[in-house]
Image (tube, rainbow, N blue to C red; front, side, top):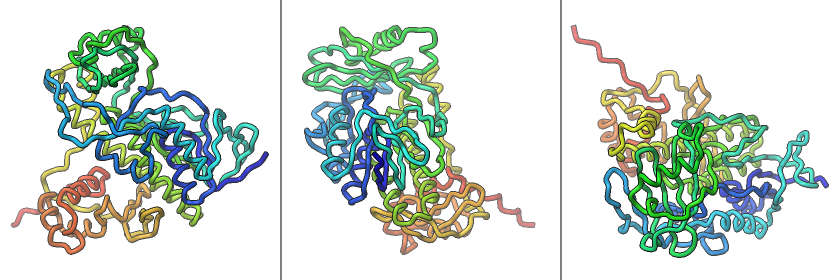
Length: 451
């Protein structure tokens, strides 16, 4: 049977499921396709306290979606031999991934969306074959995670090639109710020991450490070198291994790519599921605007791709800072590779200026649930265009650097501009650093010596 929808979403994990739910709640006809493969991860994931609000706003907290207040005590053995506990932080969320993925798809059905379970979406001319149906859609979104998809371009690795090996085990009795991340000489381990049931440990290693070796032997070495809950696991068994290399996929044709399918992150920050939900929220605005303004679609795809890459860079900076704090093993190959791969270009202390070839342009800017056109600037060499960086308007940032300034002087001057003084100095500085990273701000030439 042939069916038509406004949006077809391929991939029923957190990003695809949340996107389908958001669109269905907005009255957009949507079909979600999940191939039924088991999610290859630990049995639980966590959401930091700062990310809890987004889940609550989307009504994605509750036993039916496998999301509950996190009862675990979280700690780290990192940079020192003693565990440091996060007892002073507000509780985050504990996510049972299997329940969450299924619960999301149930919510999509309840909102009026159509869900295809246990089938693949196969390209079929200008449509897709989903089981017995031929599906046509005005917009197609891929949220297939790290899976290889023949019709999408291959992603590019960002940083060191890494593998996460998940083991299930029996924890020591006094470790129950605790989750600890621990640096070891040749990797790191995140151990999760719930009050009841099986414990899990994600053992994060270099891909090359597995060459010619059994994964069980590699895991055993890391567990023996641990000192926290990972060292006390018994009767452990390897469940699976998966690629944990940060990757970024280039924008492709007229397909929207989101979540891990677009730009996956190093799992050290424990924010993968938060990134998926944030990506779905942004993608929902892209789809809605693309349905309302068909001519905007190519531009919207570029906007979303840039957004995904910017979010990935932000997560990588967090991971880089965290890796840098583990000084005990700084001379070991695993840690040296991460120090080399994750160094962001430092903003110089001297004066900066805007590139002279940036052109004024009408730019698509997100405004709530959709996009609108706003005044901004375009890079003629790449076609990238922005109207603001975070909450900071680009026009005002250009005004700050009408003459060359240091970052310090620009942040101080921002407090005197009526349009910027309501923003925090940290926001303005972050926007300036982002523009430097993108190459829009460049070091100013040295002033000529007076004769």
